[in-house]
Length: 639
Image (cartoon, rainbow, N blue to C red):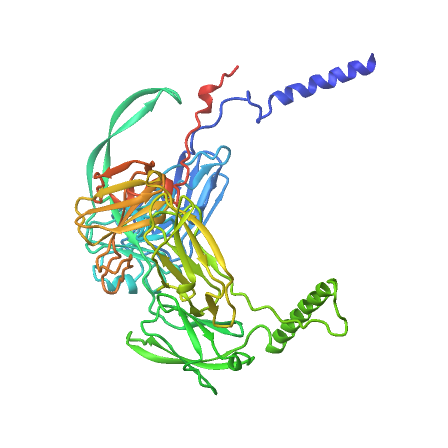
């Protein structure tokens, strides 16, 4: 009994302590209030400040979240400010000399939160002036990627009171902000006047555009900030689910607040030979940093190269693969060549440049021959073992082994589920020595009867190792393709095997049709049908109209490019020439297209605000989740 009494006494001492634990659900209401600013040194909106050290005191312990990303000091500082917190205090120390008669702002955004629950002290900007006046004007807007209207996070947006474009390339910004996850920015502490606005992906963090690789955005006109009285409606909540009332609240609106900057990277004219590879003895590839306007000239050093190759070039001539014809040439373990091409000089005039290269494969030719010989011996042994099991095998006079003809692999795209607007293609691993179209036979299958069809067979304009087969395909019909053996021969001796494929094209009932009328658009627009922001089809507009046929059922989106130079693609801008990138627009809603239906869309307003056009479902840069007061106390009962 004495032991039992001792345990009960000990338990009675422990229970009260457990009930008072801070983490217990019934230990009291949650803290849902943000920190309260108690005082600052110097005071907020203080004038005549000469010291760059700022101390801000709150009523409770605080933390700084993502200070490097969220806190912005304006004017921009060449030396990184020191921002730290300890207990209830935030300290900011500016190491640059303070500029006379200038308003300074330290915009914390929502980086300051209380230590326990993370409640943010929202939209807090500490402001002081080294002069007698505190400037209070502000401008705001959005930065979007010019090519796809993606919000751009973390880029610098700045102002220059010098309206000359050269200020952007020679002087640091006078006032700055940084975009958030929505691409939004607000530049504060602006004095009355005229300003040019720029955005800059500032790689070297010097607040000026001095590297061609940096993405930029600019406005053709200047802005004149101003403020006006306005009214907005605020909602007062009775609890987390019930609205108490909606009231009108007066506030000061700073404008312009709808600036849209389209960020782009200029097309670099810096040209050089990035690298060369010789992955196999019989070919080598040259990779250039930028497209070539003229085909580079390659010459052999110590050998004649003029007719010894087949050239495979990318569309922009920035990747060139040379397939070597002569085995006497590609058996060499070392090839020395010269490459001559055009590069821009300091005045952007195109001049000749010549590089010399030594091309060496990973394996020496002797090793390749050794491997080939080993394969030959293994195949010969297999053949003789197989023959020795046959009746009448003569050991004294064994059959002679004849190596198999080298097979040329063929990849054919036709299948039993083909799109009506699709065509068939043949892909090879190497350029062809010849392709015999007479060895290709195409028939339409009707009730097991084969009816021969006409077709066109030719090499692709985009790829020398691909050939296309065109025919008058009919929806819902079946076809049979047969290709005789040796119809194709590769430039290294391999020949194709016989091929037979059955194909069937989908019926019209399996597709949707979309007709578009786009007000304000002429003939210079490229309209793209998108699936998850990937181009499925594209058509050029005709007087603001276009149509998409043979669309598979599904969810789609629309993008439009104003192709001002009619070159069939989107083009970037150039700051030096004052050239903006070509404009891009999105239809703001998804389209759910079903088979057997024809759809007509005529409500596309390309003049709607650009930052509201791209559907959120296909926007990759999602906005950060807003911190909301949880109002957890509304659903709790306290004893």
